[in-house]
Length: 186
Image 1 (cartoon, one colour):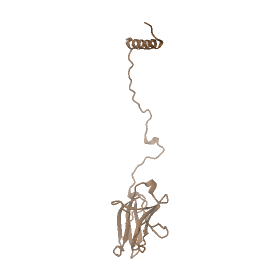
Image 2 (cartoon, one colour; image 1 turned 60 degrees about the horizontal axis):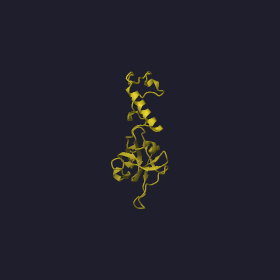
Image 3 (spheres, one colour; image 1 turned 45 degrees about the vertical axis):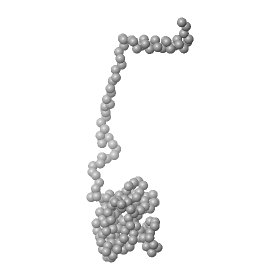
Image 4 (cartoon, one colour; image 1 turned 90 degrees about the vertical axis):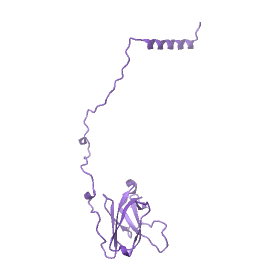
């Protein structure tokens, strides 16, 4: 019987495998489990940053929560709370929450009026609570909007319906505070 070189190599490989597998004098390798241990204590003192000691609340705010009424007779005050859905993109620039008077002489409003920082009413805003307050609002129709840190004007929406907040101040609202509730941006 004659073997070709390739057959000879295959037979030798199989024989070597059998010899190695059948050796009984060697021990089987053991699996060793290693549990990592922390040798250096990691405490808050290891951080260069101070450990927070308290949570921030409305009582900690440097600004008072607006609760007063309108400063002038014959006008109204408006208050509410603004929540930001994406603070990094929609934060109002320098508390830029505005009431923009809507001109109703040209028919129904189709687009949000443009904020004019010189003529639009700007709110006082509590940065901690999101509470805002407009003082001395004359009777009329208003849109509530914000000017963001990125220079974009956005409509402020009602939290419960998602609709843009439009506000009508009538004669019955004069000398009162109108609480419009929770708002969201955008």
